[in-house]
Figure 1 (tube, rainbow, N blue to C red):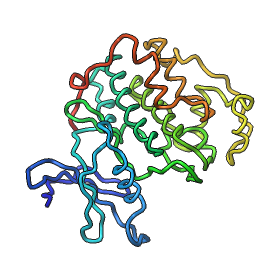
Figure 2: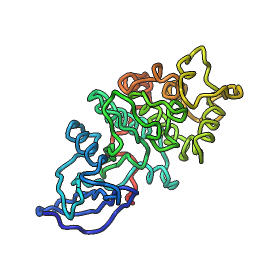
Figure 3: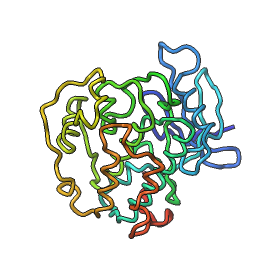
Figure 4: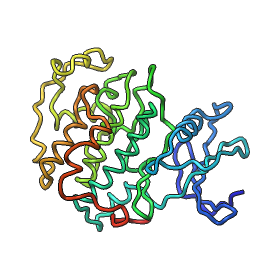
Length: 295
């Protein structure tokens, strides 16, 4: 049914191959690895299939087929050329403000399509944001996706993109955790390096507090209920213009809304899309005119 061409990626839980259909259409095949402890179908594969079957959005990777071979589950996905991380890291590419605006519109539209289906992605980061040859981004890797409700692990989301409430042990959370991650991607598009690159959870918190100050218990009273919360040495926030030296006021205004400590006050994907940043000049670059780098 599918002719494998080559391995194009490997992670802890899956191997990804480029393959072709009988009609010579390229596809990506994600083989979920079985661990020596696993019995039956891997939970991350079930989560990914369930999530992708719920969503039909141009900014989310499309699931084409699912099959089992040699006891391994295989997901057949649309093939996308590269990812946002590769584009960010390529210093030969210059980003214009309209380019960043375009990527953010697409990312937020994709994230909104998940949240309106009561899904939390739980691993938004540039490496999981694929970019097609015509400039359209596709959110991928739904192995950690959960439906809103109930207790969940605080160890979700790659540390650099993980919000403070998870770093402090929260097990009850919602779509706002994704919005912190989206803010980190927004910042990374401007800085061309990860905004907070901690090597431990404690260092990650310290990096966040160094920029945004320590949380104010009066503004975020429920922080005291988190299992990992202690009284941190008070730090004052710095002026963001010192880090983001060449960005507009409306850009910084939106950026700050992703980084509100209290998750109940953090901006939603819908409200972010309605922000004046997107209607102000410069206009978003058309996707087909965005910079592209094939890995």
